[in-house]
Length: 278
Length: 331
Image 1: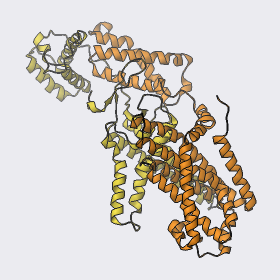
Image 2: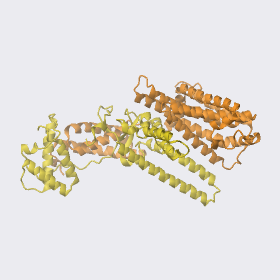
Image 3: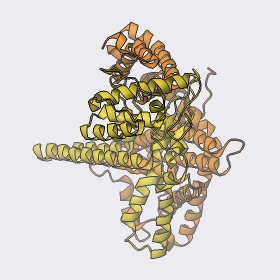
Image 4: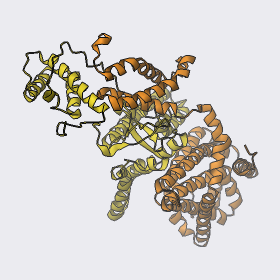
């Protein structure tokens, strides 16, 4: 509802209900990825310190074993960090969990390991190859080759920004996409006003659903300053002049307005906002 | 707040069903944290029922309630439950078993055409480089990077070349050597796979180039009369490694081909079908390269007899061929 329409996708469950999935936007994807990179680097530093420290401790008699552990650990972090976390029931890496997004298949079918493998193997192309290119361009490649290579890499790196479903190459190949999956909390019910003044018809016809939702936010947030301002606006617009404390007035008006709009809704009239005819 | 404090129908609707939602939420919390064994039998039986009840609540809430917090909450809860209820139901050990018993060999067989093309490209590269280098050894460095060649160049003497084949490097750093080789090769294989995306061309080039290097080395050793021992040195792990790299190339071809020529499916659908098949194959390729790394790091340094090296090479060839292409009982 807050989200732009262009990112909402239909997912009809076998029970016939549309879950209205919301795709993660570029910013969410990027911040999740950067968080993951930070975690990987931290793990790498930890791995290096532990193996290096142990090798030192045994005065390098076990240096080979530590070398093997380090090199395999590095390989595992680089290639299996994403795969291992996306195989868990939450289908999200720590970075994605923090941002509140997860991987899902585009057709709503179960997420299989091979889809996850394919989607992450493509990172070679999207991230490591461009990185390699940037590091290696110093040795003897002429400027034009460098520029063409950069453009070629940029196509893959910026691919998600140029398609409707925000797919990166890996998503395309794995048949997946990344959706918003926040854990929401059910807030306490707003409606048991202390007093129930009677509002006139015109007072209740002043607003629509959009304004009701804004009022709901204001009431849940409980910010005295905002409540005072909103209460003033509503009093002025509806011409309601019984003396009442702001909080009480607002929750009474909220319930009355919601009751009216919901009754209308039951009769099939959804009044989107105050500009629509009552 | 008493029951009478609830004025609207949508509020009574919520208060009647809230307990079910909360129960589903707490069960999902446990499941997502991987604490499956903390669920009682009753919980497990209740889960799908709670899921359907919540979905139905969502459907009703959308039509009767204007409490946005409630609708958002139900949407998020239903989505979480959907992914769980309709997610993968097989256990990890079952999946691993089915990967080795069916999925991996089936994926390899499904890509036989691509595998043949990749193998052909590699062989072509090897032949070209072999004959070119044999005629003019100076071309060796055209095909092989100087750093990679090490001491093995056209100017090296026969004795030096023999040493590179039979030298055992002591037996100290074998483990490190093996793991280095494995990670290096796996990375190359993954790259070859990923590059297939760009219309197969980079993968084709990589496969061909790999063949060129092989051919150049072969010509170098052959010209010194060391063809047979070099074959043993190469094939003891090379059967596994070259096969794995060929398969990685084949996986890349399948994806590039599906994107370029999706046939009757949509391009996206074709790409993801190919991607899933190729993904299965690639997981196996990484495993094969681990085996190849062990054979190269340990096997080659410990087995120094050429005949025995050929025996190991033949054995691995038979094992892989039998495993992938051998007849199996229909399920």
